[in-house]
Each structure stands twice: as structure tokens, then as C-alpha cells.
Image 1 (cartoon, rainbow, N blue to C red):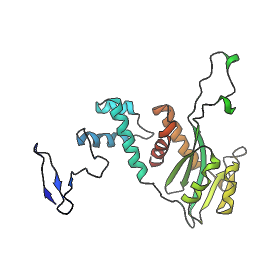
Image 2: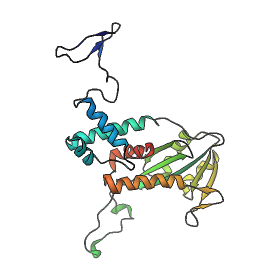
Image 3: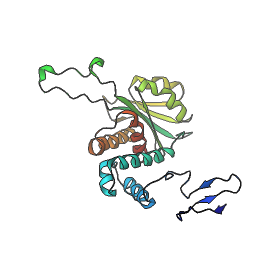
Image 4: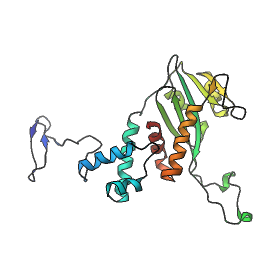
Length: 237
């Protein structure tokens, strides 16, 4: 490798073998950046220092950039956060994991007059944007998430991400019944108790509490194609 600076004096290096030019940020999250690098580092510092998330609007005010710039920056950081758990598995012999699902997005604003309001529990009165975030949280370990149309569709995801020999805790939902054939299952009926006979999903519920708080207090709208990014960000935090 040898120095091959640009005519303007900008740093650049060239590989003797492939004759390819590269910068210090080539192949990293900061490649092809237009803002000063210190601005990106400040964005990372501000973003990860928040407990329940950072809105793009607040990030744009802190950095003094446009909202669209802050929005792209925030999603780049979320992508980097998700890279830590991409393809990762949890659990194993002697370990315990909790699974649960919660629905996000697809809010339908009710009509002003009560007589004109529709039953939003019926499928024909829903927006079709509501998706289920399924979390697998190992006690004392990693947290992995996935987004699906419903809890029933998360079966293959859980079987691929949870190692055999793991003791799995789940609630009374029928979607988790097929997992009994593969894992040692501990079920808790939340209509009767939060935990009973050693079975509980409190850590999975605490994850959803953090994600709900981020939705209500910071982002206000996390449905659609970016929902999995917000879910992975909450798992990282």
C-alpha cells in the first residue's frame, strides 16, 4: 500500500496488488460520507447514549443538520446495531430463554362521533399495517428479534435462533404449542398470574416495555418497512 493523495490534498491510499484506491472509512459504516467525520462520531455518541431511543428530529437539532440527514444517520446506526446479532443464536444446554410477541403499528384513528366509530378488532376495519414483533431473550445473554404478520409465523425463526437444550419460557398463546416438540417448555398463563411455578416471561415483557416507551415518547410511528430496525435497536439497548 502506498500514499496516493488527491490533487486537493485529501488522504487516499492505493493497493499495489489490485490497484484499488481506498480511504480510512472505506468498507465501514462511514464510507461515502459527505459530512465531516467528527459529525458522524458525535451522532453515534448522542444516539447510543439515550436509554429509550433518539428521534431523528431531536438528532437534527443536536447536530445542526436537516431532518432527512439525521433520519439517514439514525438508520445507519441502527443497521450497525443490528449487525451484532445478525444470524446469532441464543441459549444452549443449561440456559434459559424467554419468547413473546407484541403487535405494533397500523393505528386507525377513531371517528369523532361515537355512532360513526367502527369495531377495529374486525379485519375489514384494520389498516393491514399491524405487524408482530417477536423477541427471544436469553436470561443473562443476547436478545434477538423478528417481525412477522403474526406469532404463528415466527415458529421457524425461533427454531433457527434458539439452540437445542434451551429451557424456553412462553405465555399461554397457542402459537408456541408446536415448540414443545423441540424444547423444554415452561408456560405461564397471564390471565392467572405474571409468574407461577418458576415460569415467567418478565424479561421479554420488559423488552416490549422499552420498545413501547420509545414508540410513545420518541418516534410516535414505527410501523412499516423500518419496524424491524427499531426492534433491533431496542434489543441492542
